[in-house]
Image (tube, rainbow, N blue to C red; front, side, top):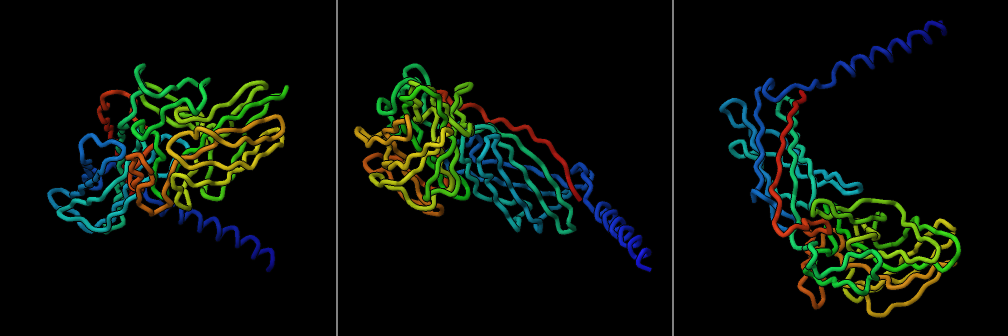
Length: 341
């Protein structure tokens, strides 16, 4: 009897698995579901920092579909960036409209998932390239992007567009400093800790085709006898989902961890540019100076933290990644489409 039970249980599990697999929705083109899905973005050429809306239109033949649940999800090709997600539960004349935040310049994939009343899920993807707005990377730019220069020499006024950016789920800001290795052995910055952000990453800003793009690098090499410069437009620490307001003039504590095992607890000044004078910290053979972070608002806060500058830190739309050309590039849209039922 016991042996029969042992044989019976796997059979039941196998049958259950087959039933679950058989119930999974099959992908079919939208036209086979007799549904058309269109998307319209206003303005026609959205940029970071400007109010934008997305309108999704659902039709079955000539009949408007108003009882669907529409999810709009925007993802970037940038590692570590949080998606922007909006949900609209009811349409008007087949149109589902919502606000949308283009939180960074660059390449986006906007995925529309429309769940119909009969549980059919129509999915369509749209590709966009979003230009930035304010920073000129041409030869006559006011900002020195030379990695050998120190952070204090850079003109980081609010017009340079490198203000702390805001994303869905919370605000994000950058941290900068100089780390000098006075020893005979190379070292590596491998981690950063702080109590004012839920996630902390080490990034580098690179410029390709006049577009600045941040890349998570995870660490920064500090060769013996050299200085690693963390500055806007280059290497920097990214504080993601800031948990409290960082106002100009505030000070925050940061811990730097290095591959050698050394660590340093440093105090960063909150400001719009590198401080003229700063404290000096040591960690083994390393010397850390000029530590500062950009102002930022905690998640859901909306306020101006620029001090004497005109920088608007509106939590709905700011970015550290922007179009570097003098003229905004054209938005590209390449729709592909599938449907699940």
